[in-house]
Image (cartoon, rainbow, N blue to C red; front, side, top):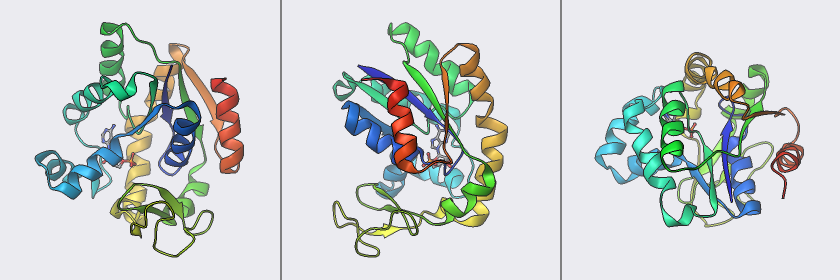
Length: 215
Ligand code: AMP
């Protein structure tokens, strides 16, 4: 059983690491970004609201996020644990989630902060692609699909998300600095933070995270 939170600026490789960690530890990978994108795709009321914020690189309001995640981690497929990727994003969300954990008698094992400098991240992000169907992440330079534009796993279309375009990316960095980076201190204070150097290769970062999480 493991409950893990992945933190880090946009483009730090959270999605890539989360997929691999979830596979290795047999825990559920929960990406709030993926949940919102699925809702946008299906045109649900939540998706319609979330899209207004996402397309500008802004955070979806806290009240649309907290219950969603708390319901999700309460499902049976999370019985062996979960890895949260992209949540919490604000101190409010972190406090709300801590209150939920306390109510349910659960604890986070670790909050892993993948740290990378912004000037390394910008080119990484602009090259980012993702499968429209299964959400598998790719990169035009470092991890392209075998056939351009086609997902290796499910054959879905590999595309660039609107929020990975340059102007949106710059906005997301600003939002991260202002709203999400205070979380690092929040988790540090309660002794749950581990910092990982995200400027290494994806394989090295993965090994460092596994060394931290143990067997
Ligand atoms: P991500 O794929 O995690 O980068 O998320 C993409 C977008 O979804 C973000 O830029 C936000 O607009 C929204 N989003 C994802 N997770 C959250 C969250 N925990 N709180 C608020 N907005 C979020």
